[in-house]
Image (cartoon, rainbow, N blue to C red; front, side, top):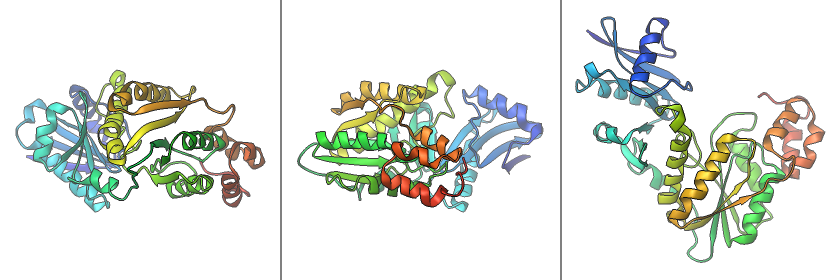
Length: 328
């Protein structure tokens, strides 16, 4: 008799079979999961899948169970679990050859590359994200996407440069939580720090701009994952987001110490011009980075961050971390 198990962590007795099933499907366990579904029969593992935040990932079914609704049972259980956790419209990523299967399970494609398809349980998810955002019919609209964890003078330099070269600039702040600066506070700091720039509008990146939802490496082998995730994010931006918001320029900061950002910037310069979007990479200001700011704060050296951040960010750090270092 088949049994569906929902567990926070894969039980040890299923660990080897779970790893083998993922490997058989060209997947790997990347962690960051809230719950995992295991479909078993007797002593065999027939299928698995996991939910991490808003994303259903690591769905794999044994060849012996294909065509027997095993995948549907696993995905349905994870969709229901997502709804119970306050995520009514989860995302799912798969290879293009599996698109028809997941469409039959109620998922709608958002963006697609040769290696990856991004789907969502809600048909109009992207349209709902784009609908309230500003757009201008005239002039040049540029775009900056930043994590701003926290907002530094380097970020301000990048945005100021974009503002000087464009009629309008949309700044998207990554909405992903993590670290000592909550997403809502980071968004507010960028707005406060750029309030003197009249042609700059600051918005949340939501689920569609450099989020865990648009960087799914969980189902691809290591040597492909970085480029594949870059390509999906940039395809989504180039095909859908930029045209809807009339964006024709994108500005990025140079990041020589981060291999991931270096690869992302390289692919951006290769891909976005094919969509009519020019890419300008701005050299970073020497010795200024959000990483350095977080390190100094963790060491209790609040005064030392003052040359690295705008006054608004420093005032925030004084209020929140003046008496104690932040938690990592």
